[in-house]
Structures are given as structure tokens and as C-alpha cells.
Amino acid sequence: MKNSLRDKAVSFLQMVASGNVREAYSKYIGPDFRHHNAFFRGDADSLMLAMEENAAKNPHKTLEIKRVIEEGDTVVVHSHVKQTQEDLGAAVVHIFRFHTDLIVELWDVGQPIPENSPNKNGVF
Image 1 (cartoon, helix red, strand yellow):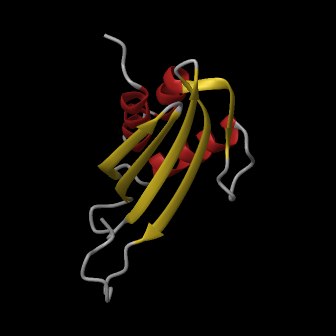
Image 2 (image 1 turned 90 degrees about the vertical axis):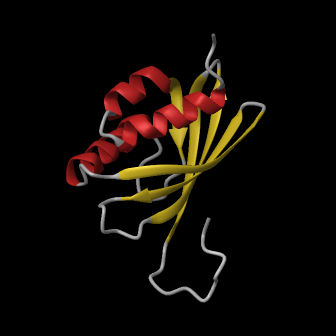
């Protein structure tokens, strides 16, 4: 049975969060991949190296998927990412664009979870 784009996006994020960055890239990233993270050059290699560095620095990182939306060639994943167990973490949204079942474009936005928020609804 063929995995949905939704399943591929989630698997990619789970693999990266668990430190299997190169395996995730080899399995899911397309040859013309580009990303829109403002802190790195827009190519696959610079983001992959940053993800590897983050994984080495934070070996106990966790990623909890809260919701996934798939529409056409686009998948949106809303998740709770914690760099360490003690970290309050961040609410992160990854937006993936696929072409021929591979990720060809990626956007990510995050919001740190504050210790004291006046919003009783929470970030999730």
C-alpha cells in the first residue's frame, strides 16, 4: 500500500527529530528541494547539516504531532517540539510541498511556549 503524502511528511519529521537526518533526506527529499528557513541558505545541504547539528546537540529532542492537514500536493504539520525533556518547547508548523511523492519545498514557523501565558486555551 502506498504511503500518503501526509504519512511521508510525518515520517520525515519523526526521523529528523530522532537524529536520522541523512536517512530522512535520502528517503523523502527531492532533487530540486528548497526551503524557506530565514536562518540558512535555501538549499538541501545547509538545512540538513543544521538538522544534524541540532540532533547531536539535543539527542533527547521530542516531536509530538498535534494535527496534519493534506490538500493536493501540500501537507501541513502542527507539532510540539521540545529540545530537552525540561524544555517547554515550541509550537511548530511545517508546510511541505511534494512533487512525485518527494518533498521539494519546506516552510517552518515556530512559536516558543511561554511559561506564563494569559491565554488559557494554550498553544494547541
